Length: 249
Image (cartoon, rainbow, N blue to C red; front, side, top):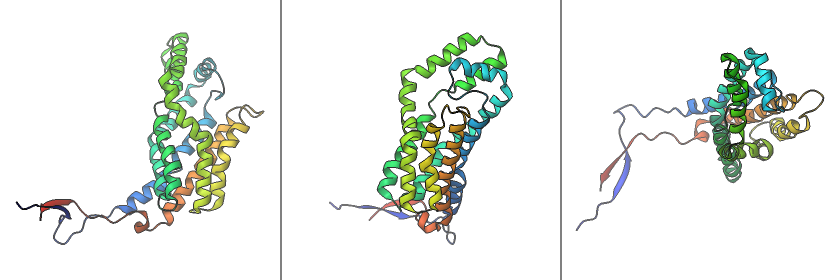
């Protein structure tokens, strides 16, 4: 009985036309996206009407007093949510060949943590809807508090909390060692987490620390942009091969 071995071979996309090479498109898109969600978060922290260190009740009152700013914050939050994971992936693809092991450990965890952040309930949106529609604030404030304290919320947000504390320092170390971008960008990432906690609740208000912190984080993620811009397409990824077909031999 004859044994047949199946081998994948590239299929012909066209007699004279090779498969489209879109590596440059991917590379440019990742470079453009990398710093954007963190800058959106920084602007959001700077213009939000509520005190980021305040209670849920204080947040509801602040948003009710300035719903226009709260609406702008929601749109910035949408940018943050939609581009957060692609930003983390951009950091990974920019460094996976330069520092493979450290990128796997640090970048992989940051990407996972960014996914977990999306599970966190949007309490400010509840507060804004309460203000816009005249709902009973006592009920919705209680709902928001219970959502924030629910066990699945606490578990889901923990990886992101670790990322914004220790993870950004680890990313700064990765950028410093990789030398894929100017060292000041790595320094910005290293300083982002300490700045947030040193300035939290200081004389300039509790929102200044998070605002400056995420400006620095955006600058740090711009290191991925620089690395991706500097790459050739061949350094970024292997060329396309076309669709494979299977045939016995």
